[in-house]
Amino acid sequence: MAENDFYKQRDILFHALPPGQLEQATRLLGEIPELRVDSRPPRTLRVRYDLRQHTLAALESDLVGHGFHLDGSLLQKLLRALAHYSEEVQRENLAAQDVELKTRGIYVRQYDHHLHGDRDATPKEWRSYK
View 1 (cartoon, rainbow, N blue to C red):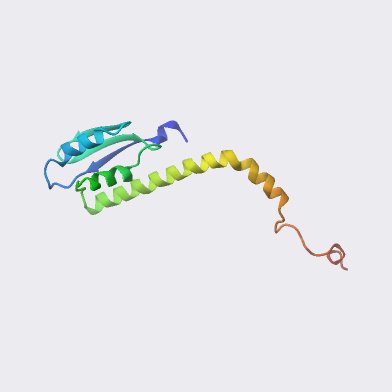
View 2: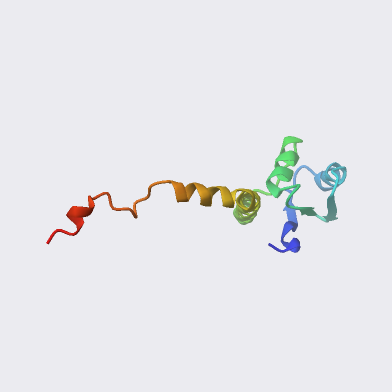
C-alpha cells in the first residue's frame, strides 16, 4: 500500500436543525490531534486524517455522542456506509499485513510437519495391485 492511501479526506454533512452545529463541531473536532478540520458553510465539515489513527465512523460517532445531528438523507447514509466499509476493510488489511510478515515463516514450517490430504493412506502393496 502506498503511503498516500492512509490519508483520507471526507465531508460530514449536518442536518439543517439545530442551527450552529457546524461551528460547534469545528471547534470540537479541531481539538483532536492530527486531524485537520475545515468548515464549508452552510452545513458541511471537511475532515482530513490518517486512517491509521482515525476513522470516519469514530468521528461521526463522537459527534452524534455530543448531540450533533448528521444529515439523514438516503444518499448521505449510503455514502457514509460505503466510506465506513472501505475504511474498515483497509484497516483490517493493514493489520493482516503486519501479522503476515511476522508469522509467514512459522506457518510454512508448521505446514511441512502436518499430514495433509495430498498423502495417500492406502498401503503400498494395495496401490500397485494388478
